[in-house]
Length: 195
Image (cartoon, rainbow, N blue to C red; front, side, top):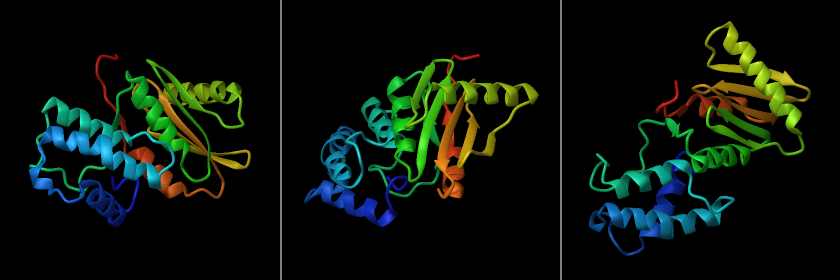
């Protein structure tokens, strides 16, 4: 949760969602229900939209699958900030694009992969997507690239290579570029089956 709210706010939201019950009494299914129920309601009160952040949805899937090798109850400390996106999952792709689009100063977001495309173009048209695809292909032809940055009209463009595709975010010139670059650097595609 600390990726979307401050550590103090995350602890407060979790305490309110837990209510009188202690975290040590919840098993994996109990945590999954808590995250999808009371915690999601608490998050909806402070964040736009009702969808759970991708990392919480992933945690719920892991809890339900019983494949969690974590302490008896999840902690709020984040040691690995990498955000994995399953490019085969429309839901994961949509959630990532929507989450990035909600960022301060974001004008457009495009995620293009071998499995499809997810866009939030704002006032831009599909010509932007075509231009981004061309830029990505030209950069990829010159060799592997991780991140490309340029000023586009009166905006900043960050293009991130993402396993057989790209993630692009166009922001106003006054948007926090450092925060955006840090976030995009931590996004990785799950590489299952695409070669």
